[in-house]
Length: 281
Image (cartoon, rainbow, N blue to C red):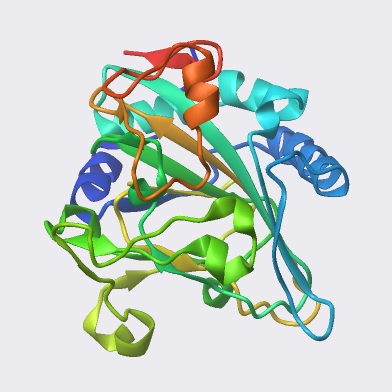
């Protein structure tokens, strides 16, 4: 059983703020292996590989997902690193299932920023007990780091999110939040009113991890200075109350086909070899 590297203060902070930055919880051996996997996957994208943005200078932002099913570096990390246990403690869950992996790369000097959003409205699961772990594999300055709005995971209002398929121009990832969605209101203008929100970000080194609830508002991780790149490996974890849901608005990434192929249906807990239980209290 991997050592659990969170304190009662971390657990309280995650519950209250919806986000916590854990320092030095992943050792250098894992970082080096994950870098090998990320670099290979960006050279040999999976079918879920996406070019999110390329500017006039040729600077790129790329994304890929679910490479753990083919890359041993990622699979070993998911099953053998401390992160499943960390997620379980932060969520105060009895057990933890792995949901999916994602990697983000930005070439030096890239200014593209991910718009503020919440993850859960795009996912094929819903539940309060979730953890996304944002783990840079290279040093990241606070100005280029992921940003989260503290406490927004507990806001009761549901928001109409941005269609990332339209943002990137990729027709494979259309998610349509429109006026017909009952109870949704326009997403708040966080970027235009930054002084009104408690926005958290950090200077980070490889081995540090930001863990955040899937309902928290987050974005950013752009504004790279010349000479600085970004390579991030992100893992998603689901706890006791997470259940499968297929959304009429669409999902990004869409797990409908994968889930139905292994017999999962709306209302089910995650499980099977695609969404394995990795940790139990």
